[in-house]
Image (cartoon, rainbow, N blue to C red; front, side, top):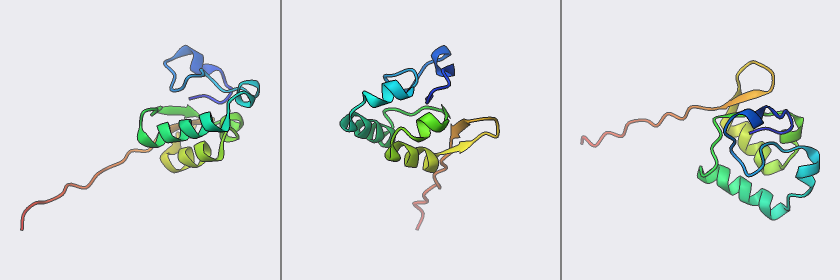
Amino acid sequence: MDGYQGSGVFRPHAYFFWFLPHNDQRGISEKEKQQLVEQLYNGSIAPKLILFDNKLHDFSPGVTKFFENNYEPVGTGVIWRRKRVFQAAVSNSQ
């Protein structure tokens, strides 16, 4: 997912918009932004990588919070990857 870099154009993208420059962001309603947050939380939109630039960071407080909690920087520029989630094995022995 890409805020403005435009690099997302060259690979499969995670959202209706290929990237979210400020002029596109202004046209997205609060309801649509809330739907994006819901889709991120329910996993129907699950980008493996994001380009967490200032444009994407400023897009929506809910989106920003989700990315900050569920993604981590890879150490190169604004590229962030989804954090790995490990589920502990549940033992049924008693």
